[in-house]
Length: 190
Image (cartoon, rainbow, N blue to C red; front, side):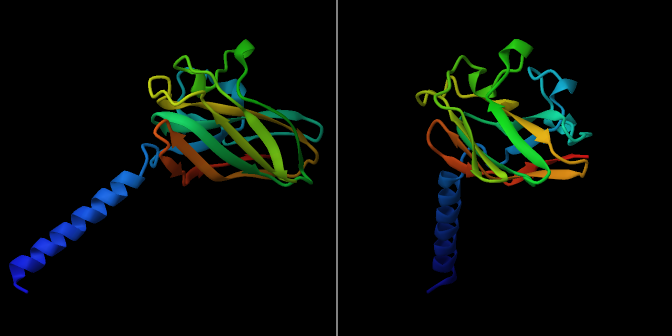
C-alpha cells in the first residue's frame, strides 16, 4: 500500500468518525442545568444563569421554593432532571412547572407552546424525577436560551446544612436528538 493510499484511507476514516459524532450529538450538548436556591432575587424573563443563588439560609420548619433552570438550550422539546437530597434533612412538599401569577413562566411555553405532562415524583425517597414535554414536535415553538423548567418546594426538617444535587439530566430536541447534560450545578441550604 502506498503512502498516498494510506493517507486517503486515513482521511476517509476521520471523515466517517467526524460525521458519526455530528449525527448523534444534539444541539444541547453544551447546555447546562442549575438549581436556583432563591427564586425571589430575579426576574425570569431575562435570565442569566451565571448569576443565580447557589445557596440559601433555611431554618427548621421553613418552606423553600427552588427553581430548576436550563441554560443555552436550542430547540428544546423535552427534558428530564433528577434532584437528590438527604430526606432526613428535607421533605419534598410539591412541584410546579411555573408560577404565572408571579410572572414566572416555564421556558417550554416561551414561544407559544403548550406542555403535555409536567411530572415531579419521588423516584425513591430523596430523589425527585422531573419531566415535561411540549405537545407535538414543532421546532418553531421549541425554546432557545435560558429559563426555568420547574419549581420545587421543600420543608426544612433540621438546622443542618443540606446539599441538593442533579443527575440523569437529559434534553431532547424536536428532531428527537437526545443529549445527556454534564454541566450541572446543584445547591445548598445552610
